[in-house]
Structure formats: structure tokens, C-alpha cells
Length: 121
Image (cartoon, rainbow, N blue to C red; front, side):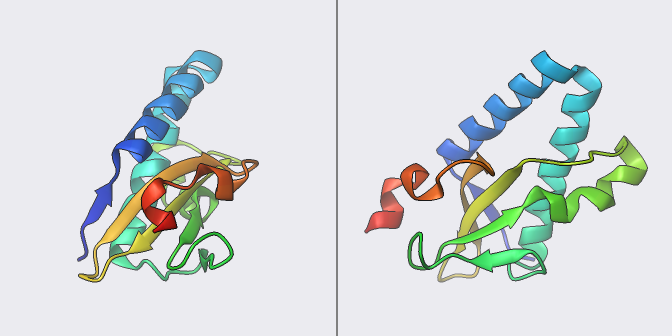
């Protein structure tokens, strides 16, 4: 299996998302969302071109996105249902085959303005 490398920016995104979820929906909802995030990352490690993963050349060369919605059903049985996750993972596959997760962003955001600087090289 490939490794998933989570950038410091993505780690900050995840912490912020989970903090906001806990504050607005409570601990149980935060735990469910945390499980969906973990499942999505594991799913990308297994297959970064899985259904739901999209090439995003309009954003940057090699950029891909994967919406958490595509991983929500695997978590529902064990943690409870999340009806509409609203985040996507911005990532790319490195030359060694590992998955580099750059950001985890709300699906209403303009992705091009949220790109990490290394995507612009």
C-alpha cells in the first residue's frame, strides 16, 4: 500500500475542521467526521485513482481532489451516518507512488486560491 503524507497545511485544516465540528455539533459528530476523514485518507492510500477521485489540471499539474462523500458509507455502520460531508481532499501522487495530501478544504472554497506554494512550481 502507498503511504499518505499529510502536509502541515492539511494537518491544520483537519484540526480546524474537527474543532469547528465539535463546537457546533458536539463530540459525537466530531468523532464521526474524524472517522470519515481517516477513511478517506486510507481509501486514497489504497487507490488514489478510485471512483470519486478527479484530476484537476485547471488547478495545477498533477492536482487531484477527492470528496469525503465518497468514503462516508464505509464509516456509517461503525460510527453513525454523516449525511453530507462538505470537505474535499486536495492531493497529488508523487513520483514514488506515495499520496501527498496538501489541503482539506470546504467544498465551497475556491481551490485555486488555496493551493500550497509547491503546487505553483
